[in-house]
Amino acid sequence: MADGKSEERSITLGQADGAAAKIPLRYLTRHGIIAGSTGSGKSRAMQVLSEQLADLGLDVFVSDVKGDASGFCVAGAENERNKLAGFAPHAIQTNYWSVGGRFAGMRFSVSETGAVLFSRLLSLNPTQESHLVIAFSYARKNHIPLDTTSQLLDLLDELIKTEQRGMSQSSISVIQRKIMALEESGLAKMFGKPDIDISDLKGLNVLNLSDARKDALATMAPAFLLHKLFEELPEVGDVDEPVLTIFFDEAHYLFKDANRTLRDLMVTILKQIRSKGVSVFFVSQDVGDIPDEILSQLSTKIIFSQKVLTEKGNARLRALARSFPNSEIEVSETLKTLPPGTALLSTLDGSGNQTAPLQVRVFAPATTMAIVPDQELRKAADQRLIAKYAERKAEQPKKSWRSDTPKKKAGEAVVERAVERAAERSERKNAKRTGPSVWDGVFVFLLKLLDFIIEALIKVATALIINPLRMLFKYLMKKPIRILYFLLLLLLAYIIFVNWTLISSYLAKLKIGG
Image (cartoon, rainbow, N blue to C red; front, side, top):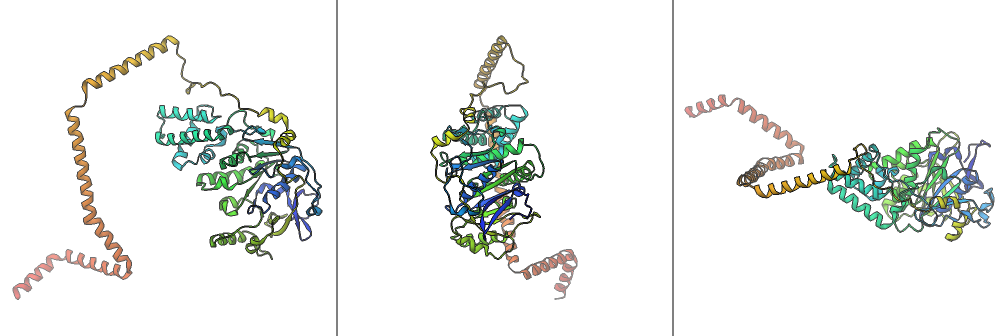
């Protein structure tokens, strides 16, 4: 798949028609997708590509949801598949991460995840999401730290107390309940300090999520990392090889029932992060799980067998086939019968055009495909990172929400509180003394009477005018000729109305004459 330039660096997925199927490094920042049914080989493809990128000295980040693609630190076995691979079994120095305490703890500040992605984590509806956007904006403008979920809860409390414009207490309450549910699940430990330092993502990095896979929300960690890279990395332009390649495992969890805001955000990130040298590969079971606007940003396609059980699935497969350039391969039918470990590969050629699909037998990884025990992974990992990200730092004592508020002396504060309490007692006494007056009841009665009259008039107008007009409209629309007859009838009525004086006098003469 190379364009013929011997000096161009590339990675090799497998063999096709007796030759190595290559993917040029300079096109990796155009992003890609690895898709296939369970057991088809997509995890192995992710492992093979990650190994080769790491061997070339490039930085790689792999999210491994099931824990079956984490054996990079152990050499694999000899495999007859790898005759054209150009690599022998070997181990790779790997940094292992987790969202808990198994390895180096991967954490993010709540604020750097962004309101849209954090809303997706909480499964908020658009109204609740808009409230969270206001909260994040308020924190940013007022320099309020939002590192942990507890700080976010405190901020939401303060926004309700201060009656911030546009904030609904019912929506805030729902957000707070979902944040507390997140804390109860244990996933809140993904947020706090120290948060991940991008400079620590050197070499091969694996986020092992096998202990958190029961909660699909943990798979959003790569999305948070993407957002952080998008915000912090400098522009480097069009590069010959990626600065960092991210393999986003089980990406369908991010996009399932995703709203328009999230899809637009991810499209923006994918378009702009390529100029920061970042390559993104989404790994999913079904291409149909990825929205079309996201798929349009993915130039390299590695598609394994697709299970099709319904006519809708067939239609989706035919649509996928049309996204490939014309070739001798019948894509939609081939994808139904591909054996495990074999995929259709299409990437970009030397001119940047999509290549015709090749049927590729994917190489076996150079590292082990077996599940490696935690103690062995931990021993092989960078101990410096494990120590650095071992535990969350304790939160700083809560500061005043308004930094520009002058501090009061202790005596002034006591006097102020006493005055406030006296005012409250006075208000309560006045309320008891005065009580509701008779005129209050009369006013309420008149309002209810007016409301009843208006409602009755609306019902009468609906019954006498709106409903007949609606029935007339339905009757006319059944046959277009009726509309013409109706217009002629209206014209006749208009003529009679305008000439009624003449017509009535003529009728009177006829009556006298008769």
